[in-house]
Length: 59
Image 1 (cartoon, one colour):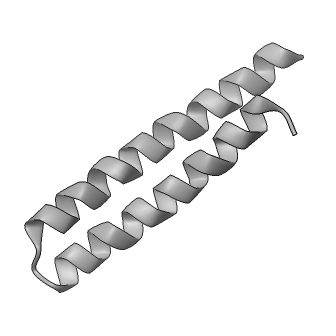
Image 2 (tube, rainbow, N blue to C red; image 1 turned 90 degrees about the vertical axis):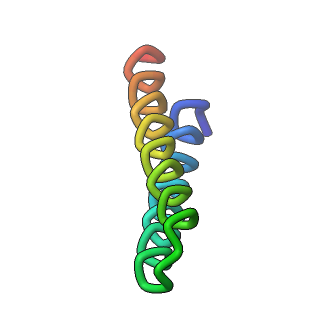
């Protein structure tokens, strides 16, 4: 499996995990958990995009 694909998969995982944390923070009225989830969601998006760029550059 190429590095780009791995980064893309990890990014997707972090996006989903962050979204779950964000929603959990909203439901439990925990602003710290919500902020942590938003940050992880954004980081996952960046990691996913890096993976996509790496895949294009490998060709």
